[in-house]
Structure formats: structure tokens, C-alpha cells
Image (cartoon, rainbow, N blue to C red; front, side, top):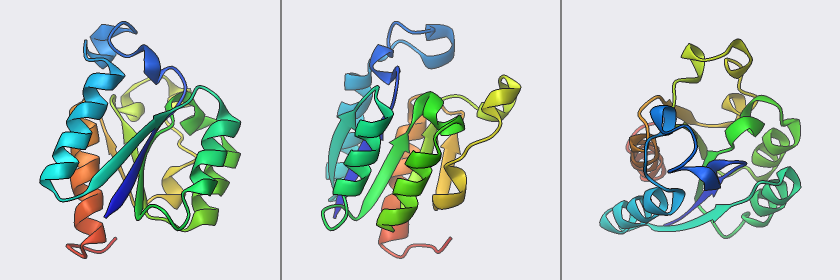
Length: 148
């Protein structure tokens, strides 16, 4: 099984960006934990990050036929990007939306996600552990452990 982990804008700043909200771990630290947990689940996880919306769209589009699932933390694009939503919908690959913070307890503009409607699930509010929970949920889904 192959899963693609996509991280969007500003997530490359983890570890130094608002540590009171996002913790002290870097994106690389989190990615390494996800890849390690993936191996334990007999799943290959490829990681990728971009600050550019169009690159994220192209990465999603190019994943068709290569990946069985997508994990995505689109960062701020979650609340603004119709094109990322459309790309997820177009490739028809099960995707899980990830947020380190609870978007519903933050600023009102963060309460709306344009991606949720095209994802099989969402994990939010558990800091870096949101990534592991999302991975475990997606692997279970792909292994037919439960249905959405």
C-alpha cells in the first residue's frame, strides 16, 4: 500500500512557527514519525510539501494510479482553495484531511473547510499526533477495516 502525505503552505515552518499552537517538532520530525508508523503498518508513505497552491494541485493530479490514499494538511489553503478540493475529487483517491489544531475553536474564518466534503475523514486538534491518527484511520479504511 502506498500513501502520499501532502503538507501545504507554512508547514515547513513547524518547530518555530507559533510553538504554543503547533509545538516544537519540525515538519521533518513529524514526517519521519509518519513514515516510521507507516512501515509498522506495512505501508509506504511518501512525504511532500509546498507553499504553492498550483504545485499542490499538480502533485494530487499526478498521484492517480500511484497512491492508494492521500493524507493532506493543506494549511491555510483548507479554507480558500476550491482547486485543491477539485483535484482531490478528480483523482478519486481516498483522502484524509489533517489539522494539528481544532479549526473549530479558532478564528471564525478557519471554521470552514473546503476539503472536508471530498475527504473520507478529518483529524483535528491533536497536535502532531493528528498525523498518526489520520494515517491509522486511512490504512484501516483502505484495509476495509471500516466504511465511511
